[in-house]
Amino acid sequence: MVHREGENQGEEGRITGSGEKDRQNAMRNKLIIGFFVVFTFLSSCNEGEVYYRFQPVKNNNWDKQTTFDFLLDSLSVDPNKQYDIMLEIVNSNQYPYQNIWLFVQQNMTDTAFVTDTIEIKLADSHGKWLGKGSAGLYQLSVPYKTSVALDSTRAYLISIRQGMKDNSLKGIEKVGVLVKN
Image (cartoon, rainbow, N blue to C red; front, top):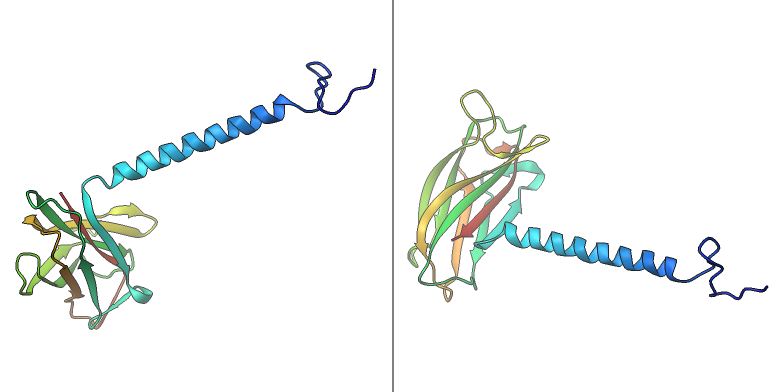
C-alpha cells in the first residue's frame, strides 16, 4: 500500500494533518488569551489616571539649575469632578539624605503661577526608604494638591526644581507627576 502526503496512516503514523494544525490553533488561542490578560491588567492599573508622566534625571545627578516641566494640556477631564495631583520621586539607595526639598511652580488653580516649597520624606528616621521598590530603586508618590477642579480647555504647567543645598544631587533617578480622580 502506498501512502500519499496528506493522507492518514492511522493514529501512530500520521504524516501530516490535523496534529500540526491543532498545535498552531492551541498556540494562537494561548497568545490571544495572554494578550487579553495583559491588556486587562494594564487597563485596570491606570483606572482614574488623567495624566501620568516621568522625566529621567540625567546621569542620576539633579543639577540645582535643572527644572522638569510637565505640560498638562488636552486633558480628558470632567469639570464636575475633583482631581488629586501627586508628585512622584524615584530615588536610588545612593541618595545621601532622608528628605528632599522641592520648588514646585504651577498654575493649577489660577492662570498666575504660584511657587510652593515642599519637603518630601524619602526615608524614615532609621534610614529605611519609604517608597515602593527593590534592587536599590524606590518610587514614592506624595499628594501635592487635592480636590482640584480642572478645565479640559486650559493648559496647565507644573515645573519642579530641587531645593537642596547641593549643586548636584546624586541618587534621584526620575521625577514625575500624576493627576487622578
